[in-house]
Length: 123
Image (cartoon, rainbow, N blue to C red; front, side, top):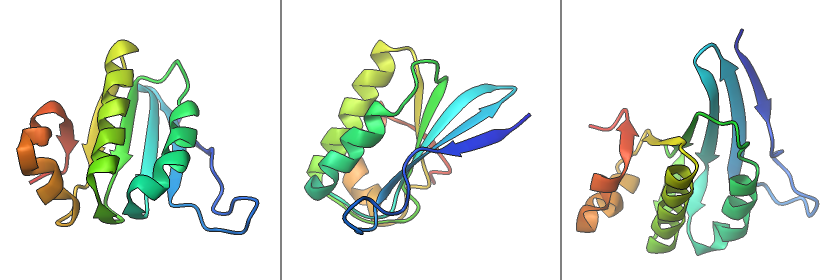
């Protein structure tokens, strides 16, 4: 049976729309956690990304970072993704980047950063 649970609401206590959402999917293939990044993914999102990071259950089988709705990314965000990669390796969790759009792709490909990630729907 497939079920989903969203950990972060659209609004935080200050009424500011959050740019990062975490959705947990449970299926017969295990527990998949999807981190969805909306808008700019930069140093200003560090707190939100850290909050999302802490919400990943230890029993997760895979983490998907969905970048389809990301409109800007900087090296600070790439550093956050690399930190998540280290976490996933230490904890034996598969990490995948999904829907790398034309905004995200060039920065990830620069300096061969793309060689350390697994991708879904990446052409």
